[in-house]
Image 1 (tube, rainbow, N blue to C red):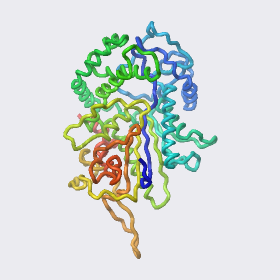
Image 2: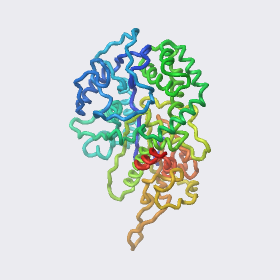
Image 3: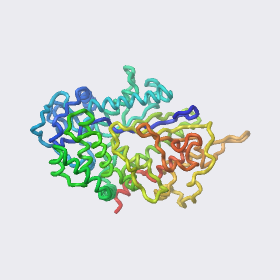
Image 4: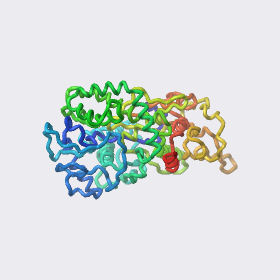
Length: 503
């Protein structure tokens, strides 16, 4: 996958946090009140809370009434609506058949478990094996001379995301020398965070709910069969009868949020709840919530467009730094610790096929598993032949507006934060001063490849013969091919605000 002529320039790694407990105590007939699977993690969580100055004096943190203190958010009062993706939260009473009791290993609801910590450390170790040991892209260790231009670290306000990032780092650099300078971790205020959708965006909620309802209706037979099968399972029938009707939105995801963590952590489950049923729940949960971003570029843009804009800026900065005539610093690796709602809309962005008259999600689309990851690699190749044909969009008439932000999203060929200077370089002729030259294909030595869970994605825009590497095919996009794929989705904060408020 990494021929010698392909040189890595920059990588952005985006991941979902590791395995966690359900977000609330739901379906008490089958799920325990006390999830005692955080024995190793709880001391680490308490140390983390102390390090960030959170009060840990009152037991129960965010609603647990056991003897373990924990918090779901890094900052006090730093909450933001996550919508009702996982159904209506509840604090159900402990069922008479539930014998669980609070211990030092008790997790809070929504907390990263010991298994989740192991998964994230394994992800970091895999990144070390690839980018440090095999490709020599990253330094073998971090020290004061290279830490600032090696890593950019980012997380959401959720402690499970922050602690997941810690364990990825622990796997990537397991032996940071004592006394090494501290690493800066960037956390944005919840109302300005672009790593997951803002459910305060009224148009996004309105349009996605409309499409979700249509998708549920279109798949009514499958929902009906799933519902009937779950009614046969002891413990689920009372929950479904009380809160859900056949085909009602959120039935699949709210059940999956409980039974999937139980299955992952080898907890006893009623007969009939197995990997096959959980796979069906994962698929139907995506129908309930994720298909809308595939069907509407506007929905996907309102969900994750500001992050796409930022990632495009990272690529631009990396190219400019790589071409700079003098030494310049740019992080080699960016790590973004996020959620399922980070990766799911990005998959829709990278899978959007503008040439198709209708846009549907892949028929086998499933919910992003815990610890899922996406890598965006910027590559340079000055050896292989360049594509010999122009991509189709370069032959289209240019939009009359000189202001890129005035071009409609669907007509953009690159994000608005890609500057003209990226297509300029300074040349020198003997006996004369430097001159500026402009060539729309000046970036042709640069390529982008996107991975999801170690599988290279085929971006539809890069199928064009002029938009991918001449030897390595459509999975290795030209830089402009990549820009074309994401152009209609990359949005500034202002643009997103205007769309969210549109009538």
